[in-house]
Length: 295
Ligand code: R5P
Image 1 (cartoon, rainbow, N blue to C red):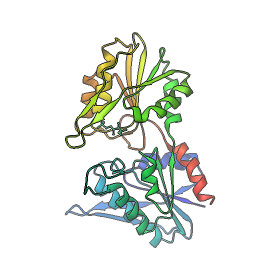
Image 2: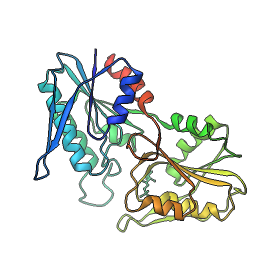
Image 3: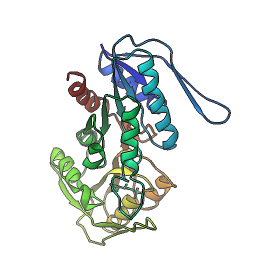
Image 4: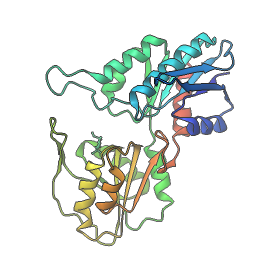
């Protein structure tokens, strides 16, 4: 029987996965040395079972990645027959290709390192792109949590909802959520300056008067993308603006930026465990896990 190995960044999610499955959870002790280095030890052997490590990698990303690698190594030393690595939020995914000459291809480095330490399979949630998964030579899957977001939204008693993607690239996800809610979907076009990181969003009037507008993205990081969309939408007198995302990173004062732009409610999943994590990805992760463990 597989066992769950909880990483320090994903305690609640691992607990939920244990509750929804009949997998036991291994006890793990963590500490940080005075100089900042991480130490990880499994407190019991795994005895030839499959270890399922659950460790997200939000900030401080580099530390979270080292802890993940330590968990893989410790699980193998504890006797795991196979290690399945679940990284609900995979850091560096947005550097999934070379945008400017001579940049590091960070996403590929992360995949290579996870594999080289001994992972046998990899699962994330809503990978930023297919490219990210293609860098793994081991089996790599992406669980889909947008239906969970749709299910949560359907409990909010929304008034003629408009599902808005703040970036045309993400419109297919917005369309999928809208379909599940039987609602309308649309998008804005956004451009990011590759050097300054500054975001510009097209100004396009939408019919939002007295409607609930749900701005949906995969990641909220600085909040600039969603804030731009919210500012444009708020001019049309909507009833409420809700921001929903899979991965709520909230860097650089993002929450204040979103509120100042007119967002009344922010919701995210527990790929990154924060105060806005109203939706759990435990169920879609267990579904993806079945494909890997049964192989
Ligand atoms: C971009 O490709 C992503 O889908 C998000 O739109 C982006 O990462 C959000 O970043 P920020 O919150 O910094 O605008």
